[in-house]
Image 1: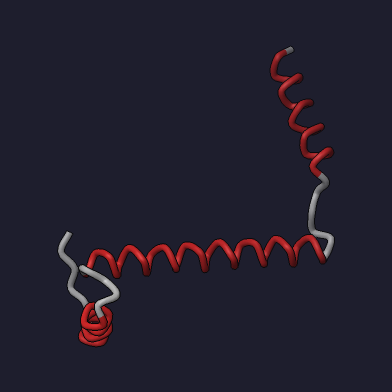
Image 2 (image 1 turned 120 degrees about the horizontal axis):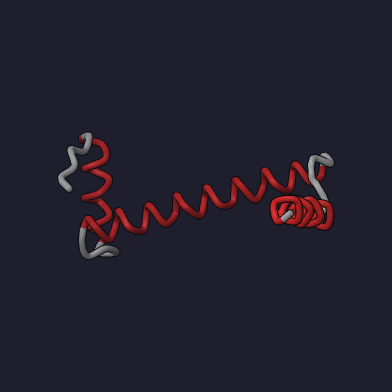
Length: 76
């Protein structure tokens, strides 16, 4: 895949390479994507915690009970 990067991104990418912390552009991108994934995961966890604190949750036993009932209804 060929990417056209804006000049500011190219400069930042080159700075990481010049520092010697990364051996290639792909290494920088791989690390950046991993950091983005971690950030998204943390945001999802924070959202879930806020929902739980606000009482916007369903107890697991209720969810499992409803799922079992749906399965039983389909088997009849």
